[in-house]
Image (cartoon, rainbow, N blue to C red; front, side, top):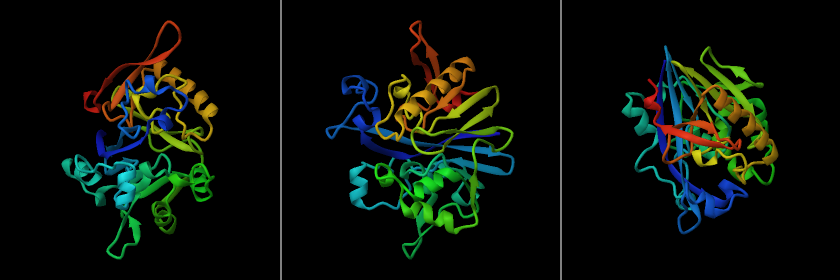
Amino acid sequence: MKLHTIETGKFKLDGGAMFGVVPKTIWNKTNPADEFNRIELAMRCLLIEDGDKLILIDNGIGNKYNNKFKNLYAIDHESANLEKSLHALGFQKNDITDVIITHLHFDHAGGSTEWDSNHKSVLAFPYANYWIQEKQLSWALNPNDREKASFFTENIQPLQDSQQLKLLKGETAFNQYIQLLLVNGHTEAQQLPLITYKNYKILYAGDLFPTYGHLPLPYVMGYDIRPLVTLEERKLFLEECVNENIVIFYEHDPYHECGLVGIDEKGKYYSKDTFPLANLH
């Protein structure tokens, strides 16, 4: 089995929303804001080669946006995008056999679909099965007023209309190397892959720990629908990351791909090391 980092581009979100109750004077040290108070974020995905399977975890924001949307979120696809990253490894979208979607927010699942020549949204990975939690799909189809701006019909409807959508019910052993774990604080039934790779365990952290700057317990995003649930989930995962030396793969950190977690004498969690995925030999 081989693991590859897939950079799909960058975008920006409001720094205050990303760090919730944490003061800007603190979070601005690790995630500096621009003149509009936005911080730069990666949309980093993971590609897994496993025999005849080519598994992609999340797929970024896609390219179905207009100029207004692009400017609002400062979307940058010049330095990296999904197609370029796949081609650099000798692959293309048609080679993907499975797409594991952590959740259906536009910055994680927007690349699931693309416009065809008639401006119709179609599957971007025509030969892949798409794996999503049944509860997340139901949640996205009946969104609350706070979260509905993150769910786009053009990202979801083609999946529903296809025979390639595979719905999961709870925590799942995807294969012998990938366990899909569930958290419900950020959104209903976000699934986080825990991957056994060589002598390591790697947690694809999604929006539970979007950047390494989010490791301290109170650093819960303002976007989370159940912040107190997120807090408890973070406690459990951080304890396990320390005890089992689990590597965190950061989806949104623009500077750091992976890291390890430490705990100090006061019981506070911190990033004790960061490094590229390629360093895991």
